[in-house]
Image 1 (cartoon, rainbow, N blue to C red):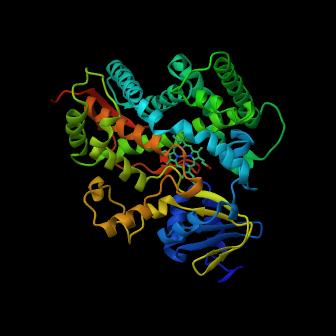
Image 2: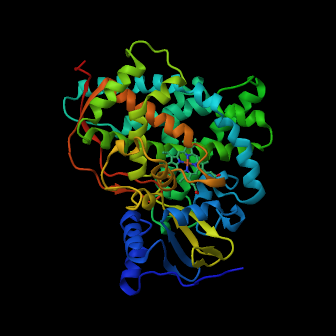
Image 3: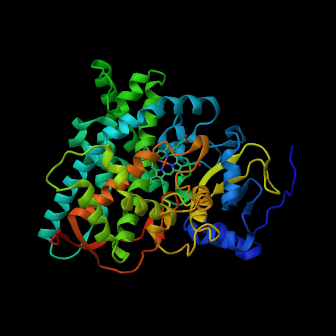
Length: 453
Ligand code: HEM
């Protein structure tokens, strides 16, 4: 039963065409304009290509609390299926989604997450050693984007396949590069076709190579099952409720969904923490206190709650720069939202980016201030909880949220503890990317191993 208005507010004429053309290439300015000019729920497009933008904390809360059968993720606009596979969690709906999610969820149990803490710090230390060695060889500035991306992939490889997989991290990183770049390419390039020697054909080949790699790992686990394993793949195989195709698609999805997003969030965190006066030094003091001497490598999960500033830096970065500027789903029926009706078939984009900049929740919303999370009143805490949703909420909330937050917090703390970093440009870079929002250009720093004590 629908109530309210069918026509959502939105731009007209040339302005409409311009915003519609830009939303999928440079989304953030479009989201800001739509919210400022047309309010919490607005519309772009027409007919079967209708888009509704939702960017207000109370509306998003209402939307995320609705039953999932009001929406479709395997919708007509979804281009992810070609890359992640048709049984992937991210493009599944209804019972298949519930079954697949239930099979994947235990792989991210608290016990397993806690078990990954020493590995994350050990991988971070290895990357820092490599950054220092490379910076030594090259007296000029170093681009930290490639080593930090590889660090995130290396952590995923360990968490998903176990330590024995370390020597294949480069291969894994290479095989994910083209599929991830393809998803950021213009929609016209992603039009389905069977032609060889095209970008789509190369992505298909990379996906097949990854399938072979995952198949080998599945077979090894079937031959020698591990009791109470720490890696995600063993947990999926041991669960027994997924077919091999489903296991492959979930592994591909988890690495794909977790890699670019976490790498982008890390790039923004390091950018913001090095640009904010005094923050790097404070992070270092905290890390010294909690992680102690860099030589003693015996850490466990108890360090995490004590890395309070690193946690606030992670949260503040994700507020300002959520890697997904919007999260899409299609309305499977007419949806009542506030006094609006969103018509069946509309692509709904709710926006963590708009929530993170909501001026009613966040004083000086464009400023980077990790300490805004310190000592809130209960009312402020409630407002912040409603507007800090970089990982979404409800039944489709990000399944890797705890891993990503833990990883970002530990890496930021350890980098600050061990490296003196000077950003070559003092300007906050422009955001780029439609699927994943990341800082534009290389991340150039002069890098020195810590000299101050
Ligand atoms: C900073 C890092 C990350 C951010 C900001 C992020 C954000 C998100 C968002 C906004 C969604 C969609 C929520 C919605 O549709 O309402 C999502 C879904 C998802 N994410 Fe993440 N994510 C991150 C890291 C990860 C990691 C590390 C993994 C896996 C290990 C992962 C796996 C997934 C999966 C599988 C889904 C789909 C869940 C479902 O549909 O049931 N993500 N993520």
